Each structure stands twice: as structure tokens, then as C-alpha cells.
Image (cartoon, rainbow, N blue to C red; front, side):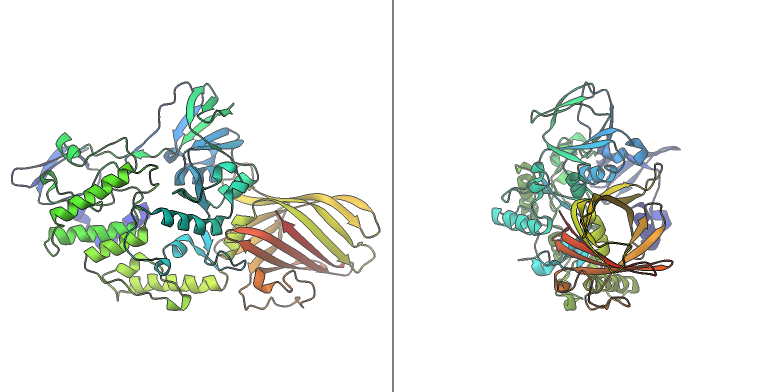
Length: 588
């Protein structure tokens, strides 16, 4: 984010406009309506008079940690977490039920001794890449924003501030097609169909819960006794070394007077709607004349911030009228209704598509037309709302979105989705058919696990460590204990999954095939796991030369929403002393 803002400032603003290391200490309005702003620097204090005031001091001002007396371990806010060394070999408890808690719990589950996640409500968990057709086992995948911000699936474009019961049920039904029954993974993650649930994003959380690396616990901390935590549900966590509190932020406006804060209905204890504004931008009070608030709401997106900044600028210079008193009063009443909603909304203004439409309408912009009709979608991206429609950067951005949507149909992002969904434990059955006397044919049954672990004891990077353990029974009746270990790593630059032997020597690169792509040499239709199943799953291939033997790998993955329901791997091995096919099926 810092890099984005720095690049934006260099491209669009003169250097003299921005004054760094200036802390605003007081803002007051003179009798003539001009704003007197005081600030301090390392050199001292100064003040100046300004006709207009834009408040963009940030919603997330101060980390909030509720008081927890009696705990003997360490307590930090989630915003203070920077390095896995903080959690290595520790019993960690993460508290919170929104983005930071879930993302952090998923991230540290590979490093901590144990992770328990205390949350007060269920929530949906999405990985970064989602299926465009969740009921299709061979659905294309795309980045989350290209899936969720599709206007073609909406009824009406205006913002939905307070969803109806029917909209809540419809939303949960759609999310269930993506995430399936989360309650089967952990009871506390079951989302009732009629409840306006929270959402979170993590590539690791769900399957870390599935394999026991995270224990989600529904409730709240009632009290602490040294390293023991007593919860509202009656449960007890007997030992915790570190508490990570993902409990939100307090919005501070220390430069305003008590009268102005009162006009804003400022409530610092409300970490979702701490101030009441018309469309999160204006306020009709005479105390706030010629003031605009930009990005001062929970969950601001850059597209909305850009449009609202444009709206404020055009209103200040007179090319747009200020909203009428009646309009603003109605907007304040709506914000009060949002504030008083019980249970509260996770994000009071989470409808990004609706927000972009409404602010663009207030600016007098026509709804931008879709630029990718071939994909049967109408994805909203900020570039669509640019006033420089013919500029090279805008066209380049729109072209990149179009290219991503086209590439998704050819299998881009599927390797990332596979890697995210592999984590956990699987039942495996492998049939080995050999044509040489020195390697007997037989059947292996057992359990396979893909566990996310650090690459080594000191590394911050992770991989999936694969281990299978079971019994091989030859066709002649001999029974043997067998085990095998590999390492899997996703390489985003090449969009492949690398498979390594346990000693870190390279085995092969797993490359996902596009629907129409031929697998290449060595694939003759007699042994591949996708035979008869091409339309029911994604194919992938890999090759490995291990002198004097040639290994050819064929994969088949059948998705159910974000999860892999079943996958198969077949190896064809040819050499002077080897001639066999090993075909394995993995199920949960």
C-alpha cells in the first residue's frame, strides 16, 4: 500500500503539495467559515488558513486490545505481527472473527506449536482464487475480485446497505456452493443460512483446521489465570504462551473540538461506525461546512476513495452542488440504522460494486459498459471509471483484466487453487501394474498427508510436505509396509507446482493443461487417470528423466467449489529394468 500511494503521488501530485512529518494538532472554523489548521513538526508548531478541509487521517487509527487482567504470557495486537520467529514453538491463541484473525491464524499455523482461534461468530473462508462456476468440477478459477465484483449477477446496481432476509439467504446459498459444508470441518464454522455471516480470506485456514493445525473455538475470553483462559462457552484453554488480538482499531479524531465530535455522533467504542456521515463523505452541520471525509469508513477500497475524492473536489470548486439538507439528513438516518443493527454488519459498506455505481452516479458519470462480453461477465474495476478513457495506463489495465479472464478459461490460476486445496489428509488407493519380474504388481492402501511446513527450521517460506504410509499387498499375496515422501511448492511466476523428492532433488513440474491442450509425447490414452473423465476435472502433466528411467506423470483433479473432492495421479515408468504404471486415487 505504501508503494501504491508513493507511486500515485509521484504521478499525479506536485511535490510541494504534500508536507511530510506534519502532525495536525487542532482544526477550528473561524467566524467567516475559513478553517484554521494547526500542526507540529520537529522544528516547532505552525498554523494556516484554508477554505476547504479534507479529513483523510485514516479509519484504523489506534490498535484496540480489550483489557485482560491476569494473563502471564505475552499479548500483542495483530497489526504488530511481522515475523514467524514470534510464534515458533509456542502455544498461540488468536482472538477475533474477521480478516486479520483468520489470515494470521492460517499463516502462523505452519510455525507455531499449536494455534487456537477464539471467535464469537461463524464466518465463510475463501482462498484468493475462486471458481467461476462452483458447481462445475472443472470450473475455471480467477482472482477473488474478478469473481465477486461481477455486475451481471446483480439485480440493480445501487448499494445494498442493509440486506434483506432473502438477500442474506441467497448470499449464504451461493457461498455454500463455494465453501461446501464448513460445519463438517469444524462445528463452530457452520454458518446458518439465515444469518448475515462474516467473511474472511486465507489460502491456508480451512485445511489447517481440517488437519488439526488450527482449533477454532466459538466464544469470548471471560477471564485469565496466568496461562489459562476461561471462555464464555465454558471451555478452558489450559496453556497459552502468546495472545494475538485481532480485535480491531479505534478511530481517533484528536484535532476536532468536542462540539464537532458531538455533531459527528462520534463514538470511539464503536469500531464499525464511529462517526455518522452522509455517504461517508459530508455532514450537514454548520460546524462542518466545506469539509469532506475521504476513506473514513471500515473497509475502504482505493476505487471508492478515488471517486469520493473526485466528488469532494468537484463539489468544492462548484461544478457539482452540495447535497441538499434533506438528502443529507436521510443519509445520516440510514447510517444510524446501520450503526444500531444487531447483529452488526462486518463492514457497514461492503457492497463495492454498488458503492462505485452510486458515487459515479453522483458525479454524473454514465455506467461504464462492459469491455469483456466474450466472457459473459461484467467485472467492475476502478479503471472502468477513469475520466481518461483513452489513456495508455487505463487501456493497459483493462487489457490485463481481459487477458486474465481469457487465461482463466485456459487454466490459469488452477495450479494455485490445487495447491491451496491439497493441504490435509487423504485416503489413498494405488494400483501398480508391472510388466517386469523384478517389480511385482500389487495394491497399496493407506493415508497420505499434505502438511504445510517451513522449508527448513530457519525459513519463513513454506511448502507442502507429502507423506504416505500404508500397506502394499502384491498380487502373489506378500504384504509390505510402505511409505513415500515428497515436497510440493507452488511457483507463481511459472504457474506450476514443483514436486521435489524429500532430499530436495527435483522430481517434476506439474503443469495444468488447458481444456483443449494435448498432453504431449508419452500419453497414448491407455493409462492416464483422466480417461473417460476429461469433462469432470482438470488435467495436469509432468515428466522426469532419472537415468536410465523415464517417468511420466498424469494428474486429474475434480473440484467441488474451492475444495478438491477427488484427485488421481498415475505414473508411467519405462527403463531397462522398469516397465510399470502406478495409478492412485485420493479421497477425503
